[in-house]
Length: 430
Image 1 (cartoon, rainbow, N blue to C red):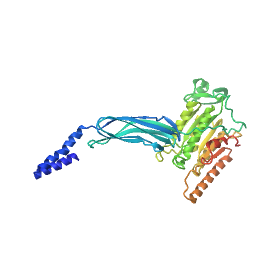
Image 2: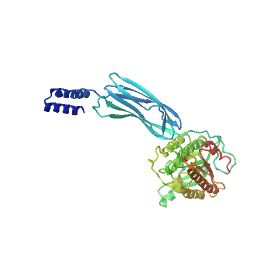
Image 3: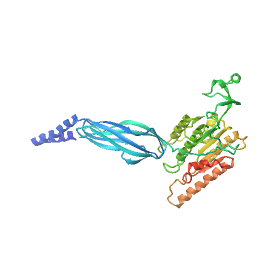
Image 4: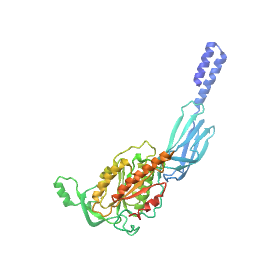
């Protein structure tokens, strides 16, 4: 603009032989050259107070400190907050006018985590020349990761659906790691990570003579508490409800808390996340296993609707894919999903495969948690309320059919009862 103004004034004064216009044309040219000598401000910023992990609905205090040096102009410092976070207090950006002296600044704000997930916070700034002679510059200085985990509820009592005893399992007195005993169980194929001492060399040699290239190992019964295998349904189509309250969010919460309950009492726990790229975690015990399961659950919950990759495999295929990771005959199976008309047939097909392995048992050790989300949906009129009630009754009818097969089925309405109450119902259910 300054160069254009100089050109217009100069050529107008030249053709009109006007000395005043010729003299005035050098004013914007002088301003341009003087402004070119002025640099844009330089910024140093740092974020304080942002943890690496937090709990859902926890309020976090974040502080931004920095210094602006050199040059003249305007600086806009911003901290990019992901969409599911709510700004409770303060502002996440600040506009600073840089003059001749150095300018130190700080500002703070408070945010609340409304949804579980793995999020990135980008701290950056935007600099503008005082005369606009240089392009606006945007720079990102820090990229911090924040993992938001569900709230950990205190589950006092929960009973796995093992019907051989009326009492609940003891909290102490049994080995937590679950070493292998001397009771022979079966001969199976070798899996990566098996100790060499359990290889059956004679059986492996006979198998090699029949053309099998993999060794065979002796499987022994494990001491300690029983093993638990969780099937977690992460289908994006189950995001029924609002952005922060839906089936997927409540499934994550109940899987998170149940995993902590089992592992804190020494159970051998594994998990398969189906309808989400076929990911699984080998059964293990201890705190490290709980961290692995928690991280896997966060990856299964997308932060934004519509950006997730759907992996439609179904429960029946999930059981086939994870069949080699656990023994269906002796493992307690927990299924967390929402039973609908679209997935009932596939769910029934997978359960029939499991029942084929458990047919010798008098009681079935299968627990299915059916989350009912229709009271989470805002209703505008009576027709929508009637439609939600109809779907709720249909889902309960499907879970009733599964209950008739001998399964333990829990229907959970998150708005009506707490998680602790619904899990404690496993103690007195038949």
